Image (cartoon, rainbow, N blue to C red; front, side, top):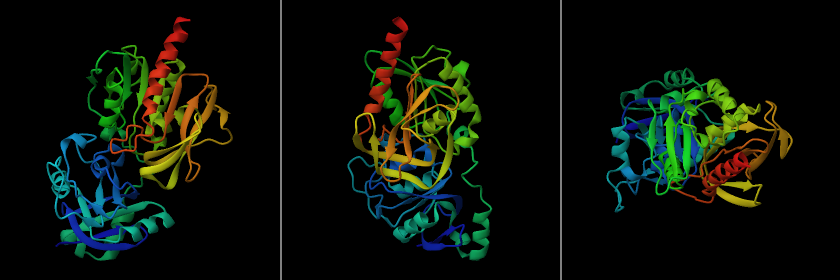
Length: 378
């Protein structure tokens, strides 16, 4: 077993064993509280640039399979687990998680106290870190800490262009076609597209650099901004594009990064959370229905809305409701515009690994499109 180190920017060091590829990697160290769905986490483009710590102690027992992939590759910068399964036991498995990490060159570490690590991150906040294995694990700790401290911070980092599609593509609707949606791919997950096509929507997916004219070229029934990694403050171009779209009164729906960009387009600020929300067990209140949903999250930034639950858009788009709120820390988890057809949520209603409490949010898109058509024909 090859020695490996996880080194944090504050000088804290955890010792374990190499997992996946040997070498070194740098990134923002974050923890994910999901007890299942590790493959969906690994292939979620929103985790680009991050070293993911799994708080569940036993990881890898069901292996990996191509059907559960959320994108074309593993995006995490590094991977941290306590007990890596020695065997794979699942009828759907096509390979082991260890081999999958090696395949995509992901440097990981296993055998460390992930509970102690998570408590440290909850006390100090997420921070830069590095996983070092092989010869690099024997380097002086001071040298490794200095290397970590020289790494880029997530705040101020733009990553959507890195994870976005290089060219437009179209996915046909399943069954009878209800309408058409133009998607700005900021790091979209396959399950999001599947939820839309299952509802009769033809999906046109565009690169992150696309402008408003391009997104509206096919006269879509709605525009959608996907999830994605990075700091929303760096996405000024996508925010300006969205403001142009909102002015046309074209229905809009955004998820995660898309929620943050809607917030900024409406004139609100975004800010970095101390340790973020990541996992598939986060409680959120839907203020429209009064129901509490168990939801899937992956975000380190949030929208800041003071007052409410209904306020005026600082950018002049009318009234805005805080539609959803976190019951853990009161973070804004959803926005709903009153005077224009637009809404968004900070979490993941597609949640391939579950839970599925929030799947209705895709039905709200159908409802929004239908109501917009009725208003246009009135």
